[in-house]
Image (cartoon, rainbow, N blue to C red):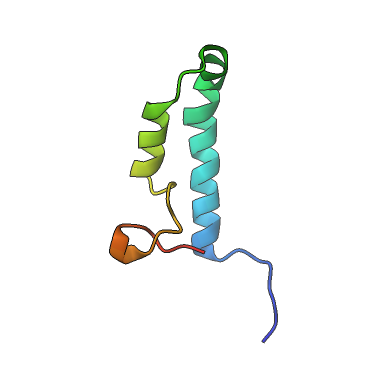
Length: 67
């Protein structure tokens, strides 16, 4: 068995989704949250809806069981 550092198609899709989310959802409000110290609950909720949060949680507990 050989070790590969290439991302699978699923990992590449998740990476692209995370990049798009950061560009479209995080970047526009980052300065505001940095200046005010407010926690970005709405951004966190959107990330959770898209499956970008808690990816390591086992499926039986509602997670994606990612590596």
